[in-house]
Structures are given as C-alpha cells and as structure tokens.
Length: 424
Image (cartoon, rainbow, N blue to C red; front, side):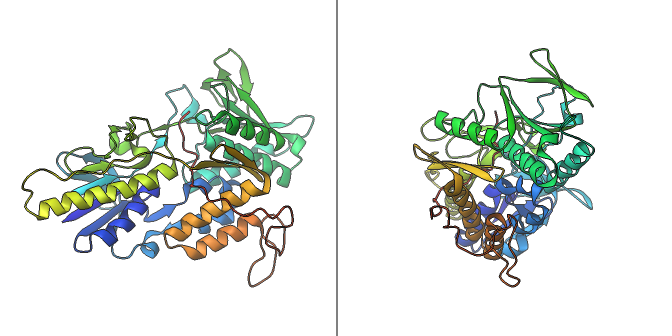
C-alpha cells in the first residue's frame, strides 16, 4: 500500500520517520517542494547570522532511510478520493494513495489589508530571511541618530517578537543603534497574546531591554510604499516593513485550515497534521499552531494510519479500529529576543542565560532527534559562541572556550519547541 506524506515540515518529517519504522512493507512517499526540511523555529536567526542556513536546512535524503522523496508542489488534495494533485517540472500529475497526511504547514495571512502584502516581507522561508536582512541594510544606509531609520514589524506573536529582537541586535552590531528604531506593532493588548500573562510580561520586558519599541493595541489598516495607516487614524512612516501578523491555510487547501477532531482525520484515510488544520483535541480545546503540537500530532497520526492499513490488510471486515486521539499538553514555551530569551516551564518564567541555554538545547535536541547530529553540534557552537573544534576561533558572539557556566552555571532546561507561527 502507498502512504503519502504531503509536506516535510515538523509534522511531515516526524511522521515519515515513524512510518518508515511502522510500515516496512509499504511504500512511503513524501512530497516536498525542494526536498529539504527547514528548522523553522530558528529561521529568524538567519537574518543576523546567514551562516546558520546550513545548520537549519536538512536534505531529506540524508535523514530518511527508505521513503521516496518527490520534489513537487502539492496544488490540491481530494481527501475522499485519496488523490493529491502535484505540480512538477514536467507538468501536473496526480498521486493516488491508500492513506495520506496533509502536513503542508501554513502560509502568511495578510488579511486582505490594502497594500500590506505588496509592501511587507513575511518570514516563512530562507529567502525571506535573506530579504529581510538585505532590506535592513538598505533601510539604514545614511541614517543618523538625528534622522533615524524606522523598521516596523507587524504582529507580535512569537515570530514577530523573534524577528524584532534580531533586527534590534543587528542594529547594535552593524550600525549606530541610535540611528535605527525597531517598532513592533500588535493589534491586541499584549505581545505574545496567546500565552500566559507572566510570559507576556517577561517577553515585553526583554524586548524593551533589547531596544525594541513595543506598541500594543495598534492595528494596521493599510500600507503603501512610504508608510502605514493605522486603525486609530495615525500615519506611521517606515523604512522597512516586516509582516508576521498571522497564518492561513496552504494554497493546496484553498487557503483554509480545515477543522479536524482529535483523531486528525479528514476524509476516509486522509489526515491533517500541524498548522495546515485547526485541531480540536480530546478535551475539546483548540490547539495552538506550534511546532511542538505538530510533532506530537504526527505521532498520533502515524499510529492511526498504521491501524487503518492493518485493518484493510485483514480484509476490512467488521468495525474500523478505534483511532487514537490527540491531547495538547505543553510543558513550556520558548522565544528568542535578540541576544536574550524567555522560557516558561510550568508556572516558572526564566530569562537570561538559563532561557538562552534552554532555547539552544531544544533546537539541538530536535536536530538530534531527526538524525542530524552534526547540525545540532554546529547550531550549539554558533548560537553560544563556542570555539570551532579545529580552529579554536570563537563563534558568533565572540566568546571562546568554557562551558557557559561562568555566569551562574545554569544548565539547559528540557522544554519542547515552538516555531513562533502562532496566529494573533
């Protein structure tokens, strides 16, 4: 039998690796636009550290054992018929499957705000990170403390928090920080509005410590080449505009994120996993779009696909097998803010070195879990500034040697990941 995994993000890669082990006699096909996996929750780092691209981009052929990788764009999915339509270099074709999982992630939502999509840069792909970096240097060229450049980030979910922090840090490193104003806008009353209040407060404090101007209760109404019209009637000029204001479904799902119940099932043998759908868990609660949720959902979907295929192999007689349900239970949240970070573990909020170590250890732990150990080591070395093994040269932050214990010795905290792709 053929199982199709459509998309190779957190959900897709986790699912494929589990299916390779669970279904050794079945054909597992993963469809991805370029045959790579992006560690999305580290993408904002590329704005300031372009060299991280190699650490956070994995070739699927290197981390998968026997699955077939198809480089194509999924343009349509018929969950009842069991057919996906693909756009390949040779043209359109169809892929029939006995079971499938839609793991296509989400696209940036511009909410049809006039001019916003035309004038803002999102942050979903490597190319976006490079564009944000290039636009920053164009924006700040010639800026002075008397006439500073203004960089506006729209949307203060975790993705917006992270890119605003990186841009403020980039300003400190590459130019006169007084010549750049980084402004983070949020239409709701707090940054990270989907998260607990103590986490929100800590994130805002860290942003302001890093030099970001935070404006909550401020909605964008429209944009043009020179500025934003805000919902309160104010005109806000900008030199660079980045948009992280929310998510919508992938084009293959017509921009929709279909609601799926806790079994993640959509259609006869098609499942939706991760940000591509709106998942309602076993407690009847809506699940936030996050990497940690996608990874855990993938494990449930893998078990359910295996049960359905075993049932069919047995002739499909009698009642269908009982499928597992997904229950969201997050042990914590993490967000980078420039050179700092904020972590929440249970009711406790951590900042400073402890939070940064937690963030780094989670990224490295994820890479190790999918078989990219070398990438994990390189990521730790790059983010914490540990010296290169061969050259002994310090890493990105200029530190050399040591185990990071010189300022308190707090070790990594085990917390699951979040990619910052929450909708406001």
